[in-house]
Image 1 (cartoon, rainbow, N blue to C red):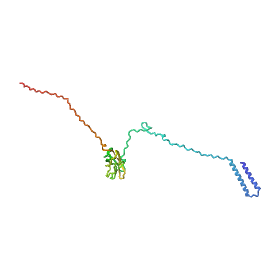
Image 2: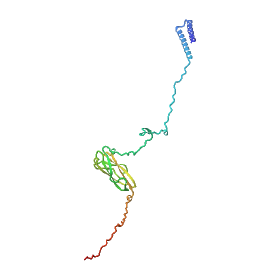
Image 3: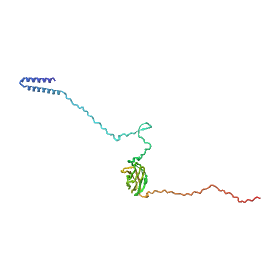
Image 4: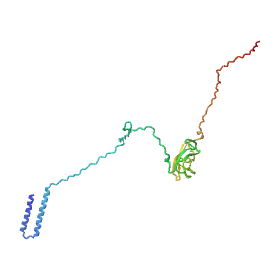
Length: 270
């Protein structure tokens, strides 16, 4: 540090001596010479100071965070089977296991009211003709008739109809009832059909429709058995054999004992 200051002073003194020796030099040239000397000294000073300073090594402070380990979904075989928990009245605590159903489960029944559409509803009463299982010869025509009741809250009009829901028509056509059926009243609905040509059991399903063609009420079913000939429909008649048994003559344990008759004529006494 002192070495550089010493050099600076030497340069300044030398500059003044040069100026004094050349007294004829203009003032501007002296200023330029002094300025250059000072600049040279300053640059030399700062370069020396920079060289003396130990450069700082930049160190990175960024820490790389590793990616998390991906955990695959467990396989289906490794899934744990669920354990049902139910309350046992006898133990008074929650017990793991599988509950056992006792008794007879209730049988689901159809709610007739659920079959209603708006104010329209129909209940099936009985099969008037062709009950389920009726035997019919192939290609033979027959009329299926159901007895039904208007269980809705409005009357059935003339243009209410009976249409096929599913199954084969067997030659039957959709019909219009062509009559007025009041609330709570009953009526008979009929469709003419023809038995198929092949023997077997056949079934089809029909439903009533309102004026807009919307189905409502219970489903009406026709089910029958087709045979090749009328002889197949004959049912053997039960025969009974009557055996006449002659009853033996009744026997009596009574023994008849004849009473002797007195045939002698008495002689009068004198």
